[in-house]
Image 1 (cartoon, one colour):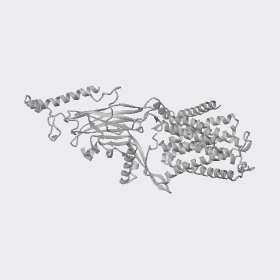
Image 2 (cartoon, one colour):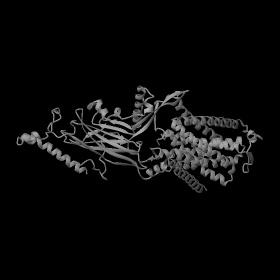
Image 3 (cartoon, chains in turn orange, green):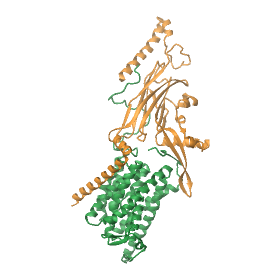
Image 4 (cartoon, helix red, strand yellow):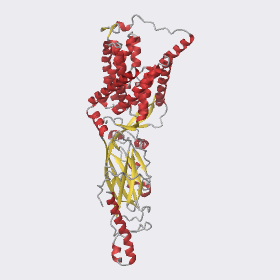
Length: 292
Length: 335
C-alpha cells in the first residue's frame, strides 16, 4: 500500500514540476496563473489565494501493539503526507509538523515527602482526575520557534500544554504555587520515567510532502488506547490537523494471566499456590534423585 | 490520496531515522504482567538464585531478602510482597516434606500455630490494603524491615561473635539451661502435644502463629526467624521438632497469604514468581552443598552481616534527604 502513497506523491510532484515550465513557455499563461503555482520557500509571504488549501493526512505503522512475554517496549512510526504541498523540497523548511502520541487520560495521585521525626514520610497528596498515561511530542524544530504559546496550549502541544485536570477536592486545598509545583512534579517524574518526552527535531520530511517520525514507547506505558495527532503549521498558523488511533493490548499468555488475576482473583491465588507447591516438590524430587 | 486507512500488512517497517533515541531491543527481557514492567530474565533468575543460595546456606526462608531486592529493582512494593509469598510456598514445601518424612513435624502444634497464622494473615492483608490507600505502605514496609533486620542481625552478630570468641579461648559454649516452668505454663486452655512432649495452653502458640502470619502478610517473609526462637525459648519445644513444625506452618501461612494477596489486591505476579522459584531452587541446592563446607558460627556471622547490610541500606533511604520529594501513584480504587 506504500506504493499507492508513492504514486500519489509522484503525480503531485509531476504537476508541480510541469506547471512552471508551461508558464515559462507562455503557452498557457492564463491557465497557469489560475492554477496552483508552487512558490519557492524564499517568497512564502505572498498569499496563495488561488491555491487549494493544504491538508495533512497521516497514519501509524502499527494499529495494534501486542504485549506478549517478550515485550520490552515498541516503536511507533507515524508517517504522513501534505496534500497540495507548496514546499519546493524536503529540506526547505516551508512547513512545520508536530506529532503527538498520547495515552488515555487516567487518574493520578502525586505524593510529597516531608520530614517527620527525622524520617522522610509522605506528608501531602494531590489528586488529578485525568493525566495522560503517556505523552510524546515530536516536531520538525522546537515548537516555540514556529507557534506561539497560546496556539500550542489550545492544541495541547508540548509538555507545558499537557492536559492535567486536578480533582476538585485537591484543587481547593492547595495554593496556586503548590498546584504548579505538583504539576511540575508530574512532568518531571513522567519525563524521568520516559513517559513524557519531546523530540525537537523528531519529525523529518522525506519528500516535498512526505514526513515521518519514530516514537519509542517504553515497556512501562500503561496498556490501553493511544491517540496519534498530527499538526501542520506554516508561519505560525495551524493549517491542518489529523488524528489516528493505536491500541496497546496484551496478547497471548500475558492477556490471559492479567484477565485471570483481575477477574478471578481468588482462583488465581490458588493457581499461584499450586504452581509454587509443584515447583518446590518437583525441584526437591529432581535434586534428591541426582544427589543419591 | 488514500484516506489514512492503509496499513503495512506484514511488510517490515522502514528503518528508524535518527529521531527518537530508541532503546535497543533486549531479547532476554520478559514482561511481567502484574508488575507492568519489563525486566531481564537473567537479572531475575540471578536474584532468585542468590537468595536461594543464601537460604540453602543458612537454612532460612530468604523472604526477608527477596522483598527488598524486588523493591530495589523497581517492582511496586505490594507486588513484591505478594509475589514473594508465592515464592515462599515453593521454597518451604520441599523442606517441610523432608522434615515430615523424618517425623520431625508436630502436626497438632503446627495446626494450632496455623489457626493463629490464618487470623494474623487476614489482619495483615487488610492492613496492607489500608496503608496502600493512605500512601504509607512503602514507609511502613521499610520501617518494619529496618526494625526486624536490625534487631535480628544485631542479636545474631552478638551471639556468633561470642561463640567464635569462646571457641577461640577454649571455653565450650554452654548450652542454654532449660527452665522447668515459665509464665507460659500458667495459662488456661491446656492441650497435649504428643510429638513435642508438651502439655501447655493453646494461647501462646495461637498468638505466635498470628504474629508470624501477620509478618508473612505485611513483609512477605516466612517468619522462621521469629517462629524458631519463640518455639524453643517460649514453648520449650524440642529442637528437632522446631524446624519441621515451623516449615509446616510456613507452607500453609504462605499459601494463605498468597491467596489473600491475589484475591484482595491482585498483587501476585505469576511470571515473576515462576522465574524467582526456578532461580531459587537451583540456588538453594548450591547453597546447601556450600553450607556443608563452612562452620556454623562462621555461617551465622556471615548471615548477620548480610542482614545488617540490608537493614542499613533500607534505613539510609528513610533518613537521607531524597533527591526527589514527589512520587506518583495510582489513586486508591484503581488497580
